[in-house]
Image (cartoon, rainbow, N blue to C red; front, top):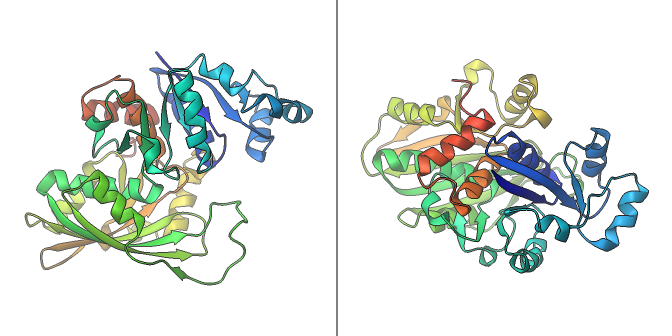
Length: 340
């Protein structure tokens, strides 16, 4: 059984910890953070289900002052783990990499970190094989992760020549205040980084896109226009998405009117924090213009990268060399596809 640690117990880190704890072939050694944040205080109030390590020796007194039981420092944890999942803020992961190298520990970084921190830019479905045995892997962003799931799904069916995307991007995560209170849309310069990142993972596809920030917090929406190499009928597109365990096909007629409907449905299912690991594709949005296919995706930004991060553990540690078997194990332990 491989031993895994999580650095940064925030929006992504706490979800990674929960996801690793569900994997029957992985052991969560513990989590690391530097301060008694609300997430850390909630961990304590839940009875400390995970061992907690302080990021530095200097941070221990403040943590203990707030009653947080500390099992040691991050360097103590690094002596016990095979791989770290780094969910710290942008730039901190690169600093942590020095420690990972010192202790001979592999690591997986999240999308906010610079690409040059890792040996490979990774996606479980699209380029799993490139991550095999690598020491440092970096995930794509939440939007790119979900987008690649959908494009890779169609690409493996008939091949995709090019895609054009428009992202309606949530401005901040629930509970964040750093973007202020707004009543406006903000347009970024084209092309957006998600299109560029898609081409990094899937260089055979020509991609471009727009991005618009909108003052909501629960999820992004991506409009995709994809040009397939072979003609696909709408029913074939929907069938392809329906076969994928990380894509949930929904419809307006079922009551899924938008991002809030999916967030509420996840809460009604009893999912912790209202999380969904899968993206949603509205069958009502799948249309054709000539040969081109158009469809709309919901991206649950707080949880969508968790499965691909766990795939990265399997690749880096060589737990499974076959791509479909690897993602299948992750899906099984996370309960993905169980709704079918």
